[in-house]
Structure formats: C-alpha cells, structure tokens
Image 1 (tube, helix red, strand yellow):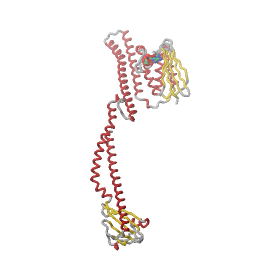
Image 2 (cartoon, helix red, strand yellow):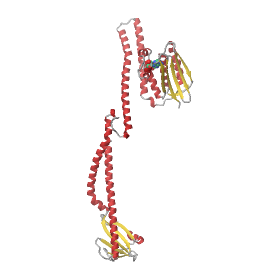
Image 3 (cartoon, helix red, strand yellow):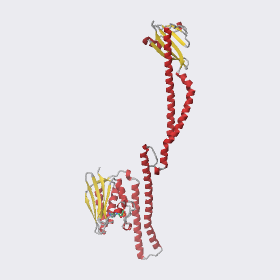
Length: 433
Ligand code: ADP
C-alpha cells in the first residue's frame, strides 16, 4: 500500500508540473502576442499620422493594399510582383471591420509573422507585419531551464511523497503491529470502526481457538474413561483372572463402555458437522409436530421402565425450516433429558403449538430441576450439573450444546425455565415467514 500511495503522489506531482509548465508557456505566449499586436497597432497609427508610410522602419514590413487586393506598396518586396492580397485573413477582416489581425507561421518553425491591417480613409489597407519568435521557439529556448526546474520539483515531490506516505501509514502500521491495544493507538476516525471490527474478530478468533482447545481436551478425557474400563476388563479376562460369573459381568461392562463410546463419538460428529457450517445450506421445511409425536411414541417404552410417562399435546402440522435430521436431533435430545432427569412416577409434556406468526415446541418435565447457578452453563459442551448421574444415565454432556447449535442455525428462540425439585421446561419458538 505504501508503494502505491507513494507512486500516486509522485504521479500527481509530475502531472501538475507538466500541466503548469504548459499552461504557463501558453499564457506567456498569449501575452507576447497581445504585446506584438498592440505594438503593430501603434506603429500603424503613427505611420498614418505622420504620413510616412513609405519610410523604412527596422524589422517592420509595411504593405499598402488597394481595395481590389492589388499591392500598391511593399517595403520588402517589389509590389508589382505580388499577387492579389485580398485572400489574406487580416485584409479580409480589415475590409469588414476596419482593422484585422493574423498570425502566420513563417517557413522556419522558430519564427511567426504577425500582421496588423488598418483600413485608411481613402479605402486602401495599410498592413504592418513583424516577425517574432513562435510559441515553439519559446518552448524550445526555455526547455533546459524547464527540465532543470522540473527535475528539481520531481525530486522535492518524491521526498514529500515519501514523508507524507510514511506519516499517513504510520498509525495503520502501529495498529497492525499491536492488535491487542488497538483501542489505545491513535488512528484516523474513519478507521475506528474498521479497527473495532478487526479487534472483535481478533478476540473471536482467540476465543474460538480457546474453545476448540478446551473441547479437544474434554473429548480426550471423556474417551479415556470408557476405553480404560474396556482395556481393564479385557486384561483381567486375558490373564485368566475371571471366573464364569465375572466373565459375564465384565462383558456387560465392556459392552456398556463401548456403547458409551459410540454415543459420545456420534455426538461429537454431530457437533462438528454443525460447526463445519451447514448454516449456508437451505434447510427444508419439516413437520415438527409429526416428529414430536413420533419421538414421544419411540421414547415412551424406555421411559415407562423408569415409571415416567410422556404425553403429546398440540397441532398435527407445523412446518419449520430445519431439515429432518436436525429436527429429530433437537426433539430427541430434549425429551431424552426430560426422562433422564426425572423422578419415579414423573411426567413429561411435549407440545407443539402454532399461530399466524409463531411455532412453539416445548418439553416440560416434573423432574429434579436445574439450580439457578447452573442454568446458563448447561448449554456449554460437556457441562453437567451432576456428572456421575449424567454418565450413569448414558448422557454425554453434549445434548444441549447440540440443541443450542440447532436453534441458532434455524433462528429458533431457546428459553429455559427450571426450578429445583419441581421440574424443567425448555421451549423453542420459530417465526413463521
Ligand atoms: P447430558 O448428556 O449430560 O444430559 P446435556 O447437554 O443434554 O448433557 O445436558 C447438560 C446437563 O444439563 C445435564 O447433565 C443435566 O445436569 C442438565 N439437564 C439437562 N436437561 C435437564 C432436565 N430436563 N432436567 C434437569 N437437568 C437437566
């Protein structure tokens, strides 16, 4: 960027130098021309006044032209040899207006001839002509000085450009060098929103990196426990240290740990799929009421073993742009939690309602509830109120993180209400488009 700004400054400098010299030369030449014509005018008046037309005047060509264009007198050339001068622009003009002027290039480029014509009382035209330097020759003669001054100006221009660019870019450099203190560096007011955005992004990246690191550490830890159990029981059996009864028990433990690993890995895969930006995809509309009803039926059997009943209440049809897989994931996770953290003889109410503007899905239970201080954090990955209870019941600590992710992906408004000992209600509201 620095180089570009620098080059642009120099370009502008050179352009203004060239334009200024051309304009100055043109102005100077126009002035010379005016002066020459004014001199010629005065000369012509004097010649007529003093009746001395046929006198030789240095540097001046005097011509007298008859009305018909024939030349009556010429101070430089034999008049009889000259052809009609009627076609000369200055003569034409003088015939019409009384006076006329013209500038003509002489044979050499360096000189121009200026003519001034004046109509006399007797109808003849008096024309005085003078050779003077042409614009080209003026340009040429001033060229060395112009180039010298030009080079000097370009050098000054380059130096100024260098310092100007440096001072312009300095705050930006400072800002880039120390992103952590972006707010303290004095930058241009125009750059403040930009700087704020960069800082916000910078912080976001840092926190995302932190979260990822924490997540990886948690995953590793969570995987380790069932793997250690599997390997421990297998080792005991391998060493022949287990009797018939033990083998059955150990195999059961191994199966449980393996199942736990599977659910854990499945949840991790789901989360990473959500993380990897399904957000850009268009999610097809799905009847969330049907999915809720199906899930109630599916989970009822398992729940009844814990003496928990699940019921569905609500509409038959409510389409949400969520996609079938995410819808099932969301509904299943919430109902499974409501059963898992319930009490014996407890109830779970699953509802889907709809009006002109919103679709509401809620899962309410009469379970153990969530203490206030944990309510905000339970949507974090691997956060559990009671770790051992969750593990015992096959929880991974990832269910609500997945739910939250799905809600933000589908613009669903997620609300949690819970009271310890009484129960929990989690609801999601979508706007109908
Ligand atoms: P888990 O696999 O442990 O259930 P979740 O992310 O689904 O993980 O839930 C996180 C924690 O939130 C749970 O461990 C539990 O402590 C608490 N929780 C979730 N749902 C409920 C509920 N319906 N009633 C009481 N506690 C709940």
